[in-house]
Image 1 (cartoon, rainbow, N blue to C red):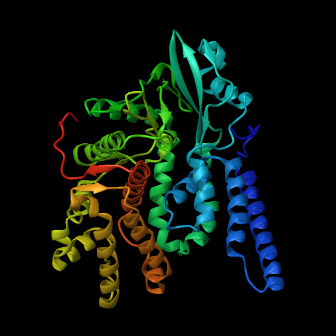
Image 2: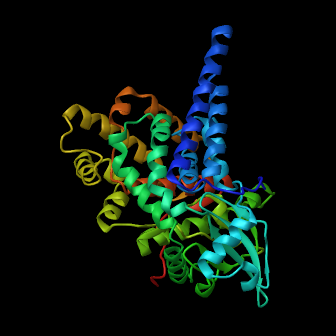
Length: 437
């Protein structure tokens, strides 16, 4: 576990000054890199990226909240950032410097009016896990093992200002213009505000667990409203090991296939039956028990799916539809991939690029049984991303599509990557679900 933090910059001025300091460090890294290049005759871009990634991540770790969450989001799409950044930012998915116990105690008193040790029989002073917006402590009460999530101070209040301050860094890293990404930034801001609302998360978690209660191989915590508050969320402690640790140990192909199928069915049920989804599918949110069943935690990020978007999105997953240019044109307009003001030349460029990309990403749906251990499939995805990022025409046209794509793409990217790490073979054909929603 990283060194504990005794304080988090909360005020706008303090947080803004942290961004300014970070910018100065990044600037110094550029000066150092170009000074070395003048001597060696060549710029070491990899070393520059590593230095910048380290300094930016260290600052975001101190700020916590939406700033660190942004790093986590960016790390999930390895086509968006240079490898040094995605590797470093991925740490936000698993661990970040935890908050010291005095600050945890202060949060309890502000929310529940009592010290943790006045509420629980035992309360672990050291966090078991610390992430971007909160950390988890083990506790015991009346013979029950509990997981208590404590939100970092100032998270909710700083989201809007943090995103405004982090935006220049994100735009620089992704090489896009501010105006083009405004609708997407608003979507992210809205979801981050929801994630900072533990009362909403409590309600969504209980609702989600109930609706998915009969899915085979999936289990959820029990939630305790009486031990929860706006910045505290208490649930049962799920026994098992993180899916990342499980995957590193030797497992039979049968176990890998079974777990992959459970994960796939879980997500297809959410999308097709519930019209909402757990939109944060990184390994830190899943654990495996002794029966090799899948435990799902952290329902802070739930994406509700509008019906018109759902219909258009999944219609495009069919190769038969992708082979129909007229229908593709209609659906691309519905999904805001093609804009009314686009000249014919831009329509042709965008249509070809997105059709090729969708055909690639929808391969599992069309193949039926799909082997996610196939390295060539993921190499194609990364190559396509690299091609798009380096194409000057696509740089001019890249901010495309409905704002709903952000969390849909994030969900599928995360799901595909976990299945790839699992090396699972999955039946991706239509599954008949129990309609229990």
